[in-house]
Image 1 (cartoon, rainbow, N blue to C red):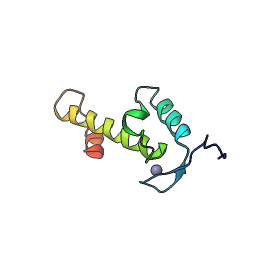
Image 2: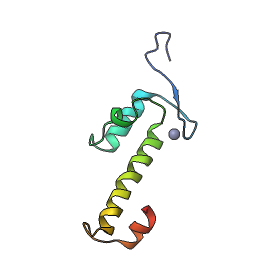
Image 3: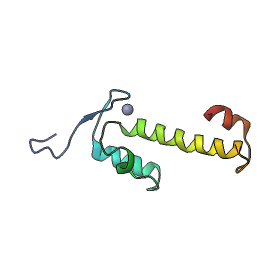
Image 4: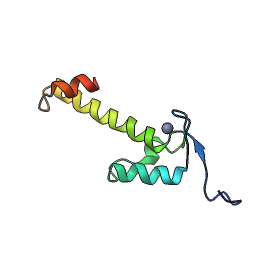
Length: 84
Ligand SMILES: [Zn+2]
């Protein structure tokens, strides 16, 4: 943290941890291999990378579970029970 505000520290509204939004963005985007864009959902920098990754993975997995329920993907009982 410098006087010039180059590095900003934010507080996650979910877990209360402090984080650097620049690091959070790169951690998030590298976790999803650039398929998800931090700025689409988390540009407000109110959520840390860990919480953002957990939330996005849950949404992706819920989507897959719904596809399984609809018969659009191979059904996996454990997976559906876990995410729906
Ligand atoms: Zn958090």
